[in-house]
Image (cartoon, rainbow, N blue to C red; front, side, top):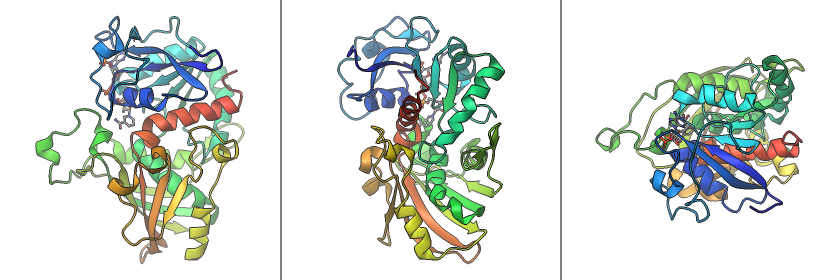
Amino acid sequence: MNENRIPVGILGATGMVGQHFVKFLQNHPWFEIAWMGASDRSAGRLYREATVWRLEGEMPCGVEDFEVRECKPVNAPRLMFSAMDASVATDIEREFAKAAHVVVSNSRNHRMEPDVPLVIPEVNPDHLKIIPHQQRLRGWEGQIATNPNCSTIVLAMALAPLKPFGITRVIATTMQAISGAGYPGVASMDINANVIPFIGGEEEKMQQETQKILGDFTGEGLRPLSAKVSAHCNRVPVLDGHTVTVSVEFERKPSKQDIVSALVNYRSTPQDRKLPSAPPQPVIYMEESDRPQPRRDVERERGMAVFVGRLRECPVLDYKFVALGHNTIRGAAGAAVLNAELMYSEGLLD
Ligand SMILES: NC(=O)c1ccc[n+]([C@@H]2O[C@H](COP(=O)([O-])OP(=O)(O)OC[C@H]3O[C@@H](n4cnc5c(N)ncnc54)[C@H](OP(=O)(O)O)[C@@H]3O)[C@@H](O)[C@H]2O)c1
């Protein structure tokens, strides 16, 4: 262990998102993996024995010989990232928060609870102010903070710069990568040369999470954005990268140039504070008529930026555009690590 770095643990370290955490945290300037947990099928085994490494490249050295632990708050670091299966995350994350751990979760389980912040550091860093209420209400010394669903984050980051124009209605249609379904995901016989127009629970998540994220902290609670949001979610044969086509209506219709300026000039707290995983430019506007594209653009900026293009007038709402983001990086592990960096910069890990 490097004494200057903060020890962190990963709950669900053997799974797909857990592996992304391991990869993303490699050589992190502030955080160092010190603990890994998974189910009792894996507990007691070495990480390299318990894990089938499914990401590109080798398993990072330094983690292979970690002993995988049971997901119990015993000798675990204070800061815990969670990538556990949703069927078990509710109780285990609560148990850790009760035992004074800071749980930065990627699972859906607690996202919509009124006293749990659902954070994108660029968009709603002030929602972390709900944490003292959470601790008081639940009698916890620890806390739970969450990041959004992998398609919500793409939509919310593209809409956030446009919030000052007064968003009233949004229609978003996704083309979601197969990696978003975890491993092995959708059967190849179903997804090859095909589109599956249903992802269970996804449309409701996108609608509600977007309203919560773009809402306001009132001093006592989180007031969701009153805009109506309608999502259509589809699984497509793309490996990584969720594409979302968006139509949006505003209270005061801006000019096209106003929208481009808002997107291009969008910077926020992570950029001001130079958080290690923050992309210098969180939203990248592309002028080309056929971009962004997942295969060409999604890996740029370490997978942490959202790409927007094809901005044009919409005959039904006011404008329409395309947005793209990396679902397992900006939509999962990278999102949670950036949340923890924000929390550290706010003194919440002291
Ligand atoms: N895949 C994505 O792109 C994506 C994106 C955003 C959010 N998410 C969310 O992230 C979470 C993980 O997804 P994933 O795709 O990584 O799933 P996964 O590959 O199935 O991994 C699940 C992890 O949970 C662990 N686990 C299972 N049962 C457990 C138990 N009883 N106690 C403790 N740990 C247990 C597994 O350990 P074993 O190896 O020992 O079974 C494994 O480490 C889910 O909540 C998912 O909804 C996924």
